[in-house]
Every structure is written in structure tokens, then in C-alpha cells.
Length: 298
Length: 240
Image 1 (cartoon, chains in turn yellow, green):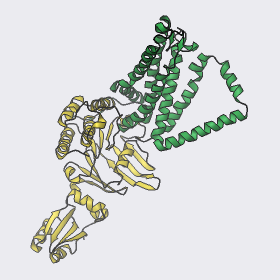
Image 2: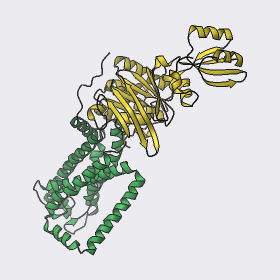
Image 3: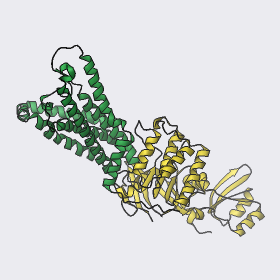
Image 4: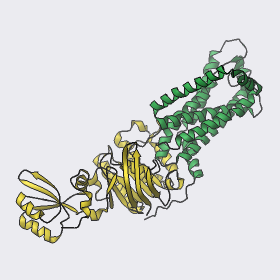
């Protein structure tokens, strides 16, 4: 366990950005930190890296408080969506600065990433496109090889090919140099196969803290004629229901067992596992309640 | 597969040194800029006195290096704080590194100005009775102590610049202006109070009793230390 967060609350005036958040991060795992805009993801990462202080609660990173802790912060890399650079910096300056600040920096790897992302080394940072700026952050985050690396929306402006390149390089480098990676992202489906553990924050509260494998299949949709769906749903936990023309789509808590599938086939309804993204949308839009994930089948 | 153990345990000293290296080497133009400005100012001044017969032409172009250092410390400090702390440097390491870098620059520039002053006197004011690098009696000495006459005021400007940059970072530009106006009002009231109490006489008398060398190299360190402490108090809770 390299991160321990206990009952952390952060208030900005009357706004409660984080509300009693507790979780741990283990060594060498990729975490998905998911949630809607303004849910508190960035604030949480700022607290983990000592950039903000919690109003209440305790945070330990590598066994110590991260705030103003040189030993802890030197082992941590936080790639922020809004990373600032001095006005006159060019791409090469940003990389040189990172090389001086991260003890595990791999210069050859950084240069190969710069080539792969097509970054112009001599272009001023302030003249980079949004995607190129994100690519600079991705290069710094990957080449820093920090034992705890946090990416906050690292893909903004990156096209699909560049995002895939990021995911591929992250996985390949993670396999070669395992570390703990936290990916805060909105593109949940894109990272669904990448993350090993899922943390979902909604309105400052941690509502899901589950292994990704356990989470998958916990929710399904059942689609079919209303009478057939009603018959299937009877005795099961229905989380949400929508009507699409003559059909009804019902969201249910995990019914992936063989008996349920046979029953669905008999009734003429279709069972589809909810994707991670659909699950997070359901949980953070009020369509489903987080506690429903843990209820016992009825 | 390689485990990512950090090869050394980072300490405050190692982080400060990394930041000093960053500030001096990543974009060295900022270190050279004050030198360029003061010599450009000198060249313009020298060209402008061609044909002027008046001996001992004292000019204020030397001020340019002090003002540039103030501006660079304020703007550079403001900008590099967000960058460095965003890359997980502690505020303390950043601030100590900024002070150390400023001190190294002040010594470098002080040495340069001292040597330029010696050259100025040796060449009879660059062949034109010009007193650009050595404009005052306190700078007219070959004693190495004269280096401090340049270095301490440069350090003062650096630290004040860092303090102002820290204030802008912590308060935001709008609140910084409001606080500046409030501070000016308070200082004005203090000055008015001193006038009301007939206090200027003793203050001026005390200053007159100090040697210029003591003021430039000794007493100036007091407001420098105050600005340095103030900068840290402002920056210690600032967010990048």
C-alpha cells in the first residue's frame, strides 16, 4: 500500500469538494479515477501531491504526509491538465526541466516519445496546440517513471491515434517498469481494459472503490417487450428503466449466471452487460445508487 | 521488468540544487538578460556623449540592471512557481532555490560591475569622463568590498521581486492591486504621522551618521531579510 487516504474532506468556502473520502492505493497497479466534471478528482490528486491541504482527514503517500515532503514528492509525478510553464519555455526546455526534477527520468525514452507524438522540440510551449500540450504532459508522465504517477485528463485535444499511442505506451512501459498509475479520465470506455481498479467520485464522495474485474458484469441491461421484461425483472433488483418505442430497457444488478441467461432466452429478452462507462453514467446521474452494487440478490 | 526504486532518497538539499540547476541552465537567457541590458544601456550612453566635453558625466544607466533584476525576479518567480510546484517540487525547495539563484546572480553581476568600474577609472571614463559603472563615491574603490556595494542592492531587488511575485501568485492580480493601494495608503499615513511628530529630523540625522558603505552593504540587508521572510510567509500556502 503506497497511498492511504482516511476520511478526507476539502472545503473551498461553502463548497464541499471532497466529503469524507477514504481509500488506499497499492503498489504497481493502474487505477481509473472516474467521475463527472467538478466531482473532486483534481482536488483529490492535488491533495495526494501536497498541492492542496485537506480541511480534515489524513493522507499518507509512501508512508508519510505528502505536503512539503521532498522525499515523497520526488517519487511522485502529477501530470495536470493545466500544467503551467514559464512563458519563454519551448518543448525542449520543459523536457530538460523534467529531467532535472525526476530521479528516474529516462531521457532516451522521452526522446523516442517526442518523436512518436511528433512534438516540435523548439516550438514555444505557448504556441502548441491543445493536443501537443497534452502530449508534452504525457511524455513527462511516462518518462518520469515515478513510482506514483497521476494523470489528470491527459488526453485533452489528443486525436484518437495519439490517445491510442498513449494507452499502448503506458501499458508497455508499465509492463516493463511497474508502478502505481492513477488515470483521471472522462473517456471511460477507452481506458476500461487498461485499469485494474476503479474509483468513482461523485459530488465529492467516493461511491465506487472496486477491482475492475469485479465491477464488470455487476450491472446489465435487459431489453425486450414490456411484458417479457416485467416477467424477467420480477424478483430481481431493477436500477433503472427506459422505454424505447415498443421496447423497454431495464438496468439490473448482475444477472450473468446461466439460469438467468436461459430464462432471458425463454422470455425473448436480450441481456447486455453494462460497459464501465454506462455503469459510471448510471451511478453519477442518479439512475442507479452506488449501494445497489453491493446489495444481495433478491 | 524493472522495479522502480528511486536510486537515492531526495532531500531538501538535493531538490534545492536540482531547482538551482534548472533556473540557471534550462533557460540561461534570463541569467544573461540583465548583463545584456546594462551593457546595451552603457553603449547607448557612451554613444550619446560623443563630443560632450563636460568632465565626469554621471549617468543613471546603471539602474537598468537593478530594475531588470527586480522585474525578472517578480515575473520569473511567479511563472516558475506554478511550473516547479506543478512538477512536485516543494514550495520550500522552490523558494530556497530562487533565493540561492538570486544570490549567485547578484554576486556574478556585482563582480562584473566592480570590474567594469575599475576599467572605467583606468580609461578615464571610457575616454569621455563618463561615470557609468562608478557613479558614486561609495563605488570608487578598488577594494573587493566594493563588490558588495553592487551585490547587496541587487540581492535586495531580487528578494523584493520574489516577494511581489509571491504576492501576485497568492492573491491574484486583482487583489494584488488592492493590497498595493492599501499598503501605499498605510505608508502614506505613517509618513504623515512622522511629519506630525517632527520625526524626520532624527531619521535623516541617523542616516547621515551611517557611512554609505554601511547603508549599502549592511543596513540594506535588514529590509532584504524582511522581504525574504515575507515572501516565504506568502508562498508557503500558495497553490500552483
